[in-house]
Structure formats: structure tokens, C-alpha cells
Length: 359
Ligand SMILES: Cc1ncc(COP(=O)(O)O)c(/C=C/C(=O)C(=O)O)c1O
Image 1: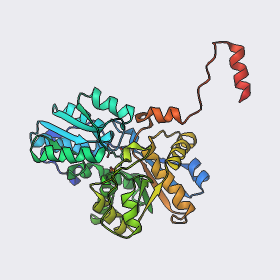
Image 2: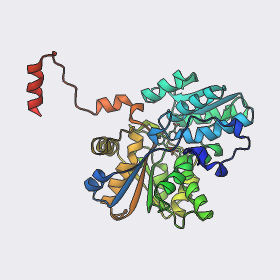
Image 3: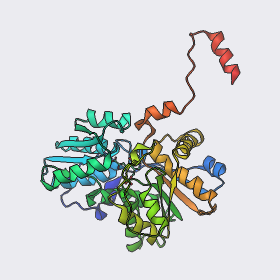
Image 4: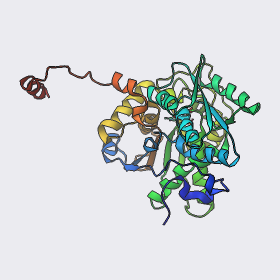
């Protein structure tokens, strides 16, 4: 009997020497049936695939276990990436286990606290640049061109090979009853492309006989893929200054835009943008209705579902899977800012009882 997790699907993964695999037992994340949210949103069948349950708290671990294992096979000694945070946290962890040097470039002041703590604590060399993610990516690409680092952003196809296992797990867990629609938050656009690749591979091998509509959600202030989709184009107009509270997807020039748009067109899917307010409301709804705490960017898939139901794009009787991509603890500042103030009081029973009465 095979262990669950990314390497359960080893025949679909690009590794020759299994002894070189670097794994933190990633994958095998929960697929929750969200009956409370179904009532709230008036949909028939809604699941949430919570990638926040991965070892470093995001779906990036799926891509990194494969990317770093391949780097290990190639006897690479130093790896690097640009990151809005989660990629750097994940690469720092996997490269530590692989005994590789790790350098990460982050947009100064725009990385959520938990992610910065991870990258630092796992021992990566953390460089904060005065610029945004896209500026950082341009630099690490040049470092890679000069062979100074092995690049593990999602321009590296081995990253997508690991992330496609999200589709495999959804299929297995639903006994190969493929969802009608899979909704994914989109930043650099690697994940939606990878998930589509996974469904297609299960289709080609005859394990499933239908394919889901791939639906990408971006933030209003960083939606080059949504704009291209609305014009039915394959080329994007990059954003010079992407802006959103969902800093994980604060990306203006997604490297996988073409792959993502092809996935959306080929699957008869859709792309939509949501406001920061809609993202935060969805983040709160998911926590307070289903007990699932995710970081803002993750909740954009829920915000997008709500919006597309209201717009009549998504039918209420579809079987829907929303991917939530990162744990809520990644961004504690926003969670505290968006919550009711704690009450400060002496440790006095009567006082506390009176507070309980207030309800
Ligand atoms: C929580 C969360 N949700 C969604 C995305 C978007 O996925 P892609 O569309 O595959 O980029 C990210 C991406 C983060 C980085 O790009 C990075 O960490 O550098 C994320 O962390």
C-alpha cells in the first residue's frame, strides 16, 4: 500500500534516482466538504482543498519537493528564488534539508510576517530589495543565467510537476468523480497551469473521463490575466505597480500567463478579479463558517466563487473545488487588524461574567 503525498504519484514525476528525493511529507492535504458555506452561498456541492496544511503552510511545498530533489540529483550546491513570501519559505526549508545554500529576494516591506520569519529561520540568505516581486524575479533570472544559482521560481518546470499532484489528490478523494469547476487564486500563474496539467494527465491515462473548468481569480489591483481573458487574448499587458492587500498575489507580470490562459481557454473556464474588501470578507467567512483559516490571497478563490455565482457565470448545481493556497498564520497582522479588538480586564470573575452577559 502506497503512502499518501506528492511521491505517491512517482510515475508522473521527473526523478530518476529515488535516493535523491528531498521530502517533508508534503501533500495529502484535506479536501473539506463545506456544507455551511454551501448554505451561505446557496450552492449544491462545495469543497475546499486546503493547501495551508502543507509542511511550510502553502502549496509551494509540492513544487519544491520535486524541484529541490531534481537539483539534488544534479548535485546543485546553491538555489535561489524571488518571492512574495511563500516560495521563499518553502525553498528555504527544502534546501536546508538538502544541505544547499539558499538565497531569496523579497520585495522590501511587502512580505507577510510569518513568511519572512520562515525564510529567515530556515537559514536562507534573505535579501530585501527596494522594488516589487517582478523586479526581484528579473534579478534572480540573471543570477541563474550566470550559473550563480539554480532558479526555483515557477519558470522552472519541475515546480509545476510537483504542484500538479493537487489535481491527482482531488480525483482520488472524489473517487474519480471530477469536479465541474476548480477555482484557483492566481499570481505568477504557475499553480492554475500545474493543476490543469494534472487533470489532463489523469485524463490521457484514462483514470478520468471528463475535465473541470479552470477558473482563475486575481486581485483588482493585479489582474493582467483577467484583462487578457476578457479580451480573449493570450498576451498580457503587465502591471507596472500591482497593488493588493493579498501580498502573495501582488504580481504584475506573471511568468506563466500564457500557460494559465491556455488552461482557462482549453477547459472552457473563466478568469475574474475581486476587490481587497471582497478578499478579506471571504477570508473571514471561511474561518467563521468552516473553521478554515487561510491567508488573504488564498481566500480570493472563495471571493471569486461568490462573485461568479452572483454574476451567473457559475451554476449553483456545479460540483466545485476551491483551492486555498496558504495558511492564515502566514499573515497574522492582517488577521488581527481585521478582527474585533480583544477586551482588556482584570482577572475578576464578576467583571468577566458581566462581559459574558453582553453576548
Ligand atoms: C498563498 C498564495 N496563493 C496564491 C499564490 C499564487 O500562485 P501562483 O499563481 O502559482 O503564483 C501564491 C504565490 C506566491 C508566490 O508567487 C511566491 O511565494 O513568490 C501564494 O503564496
